Image (cartoon, rainbow, N blue to C red; front, side, top):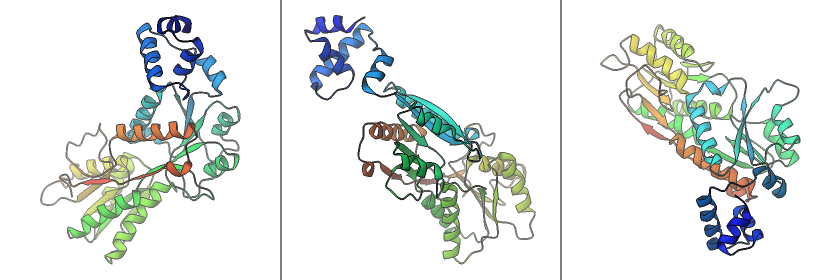
Length: 331
């Protein structure tokens, strides 16, 4: 089905039909709507490759994620990626996953940039001082950071207030009378991990409480499980446990459940950042710091990427969402 047939049916020029389908703003909204409706009725699909060449766009976005620790094991991250991909696909834009090894001499995402195989990058799991973002900013390549870093110039970013989420969860436990509160945190320098840990430490410091039950480890269920066993064997075990990721939280919940201490009179209070994974075998409504739905996050990030590609002012592409809290049965 050609543009000529659509143009003839609507009494328009082929050029007008082409520009309407390609989103040019010199075509009125009414005309664009008529053209799109007729194209849809006829099952017309544009020649994507030709359109990309003509408009100088690739219609692809790369999502850069670290190899260590691999976030593909995290259900929250993967659900978010799925939603971003789904939303971008609605605009005929492909999402490419790019694993990046920060210890490598050459970074895979730079090959994509230098060969111009993507229009922009989404950089996940940012560091407090992130050399990847500094490099992209230096060469002037568009990127959206998932997390805030310290950079010399303004940049586009989307983030949750990780500090506030953990601070308020810790304060909740303190207000419930807990004085021995543990945190099981990831052992890396990613910005959101540092922010969550600092929220915990500041809440304890304000209340004059010790942080001696802080533990750092790789993000795995096994680590959460074994660390919980270790903590509860102490002479002065914690009466409450916080985790900064749901894989740790799942391991903690399993350990407490097996010991009969997840709910009931002898329970150890548990708060899990992001809540338990959907495939958890623990069937208890665990207290959680909640960061909106994955669908909502995916739509927000996809919208910001589209605006970034279209050249919108960076100052308008900085979004901080506040997390919520659910007490569940374990706080």
